[in-house]
Length: 109
Length: 113
Image (tube, rainbow over all chains, first blue to last red; front, side, top):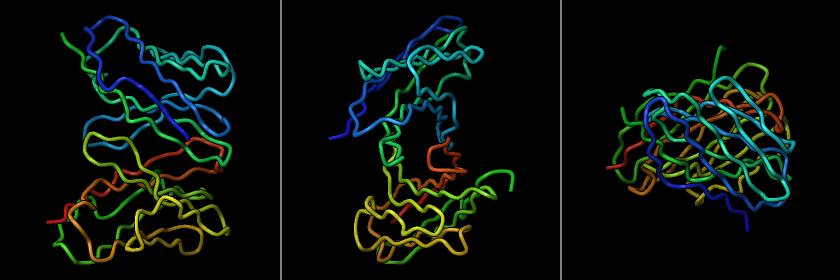
């Protein structure tokens, strides 16, 4: 079956760095997406990886290892507004997104 | 339009009633998706439209759920004889092509009493 695993909840301190991991098993692979979702709002796109390696975009970076079925989202210089859920999603061979349950990130002052 | 829009933003209905949820995708986007998200949960795929192809209905949880997309643009998700377990946020997303990033609307929060 298809499966996306990510931690349910993480806590970090303002100004620090946090890494949110995602492991996946899917039928085919056409890229991995990270989305941010604030409470009561729709998910918004953060990053897309289809090749192995690190993609950096400002304070956010996303890493992919296809051979390991593994990705992480790295958030630097954490701000209170980064408190949100972070959703990992893999696009399968049918171009359907398979979604993880999300990681709720709590930022403490 | 500038983004995906959905209406209504909130809907409260009584058990057994029918509801219609509407999604206006970004202009020119050929692919449209409906998802359901229960409180604190991940996204559950419901149905997918791509151009003029037959929709992928594999995620619809029961025959009470149906959706259509008229003229390749606006989509309506209909839930007949609503049940309390249908209470959730219903999200619509669109994308220029299936392989590209999905952009989400604000969602419709459905509460079935």
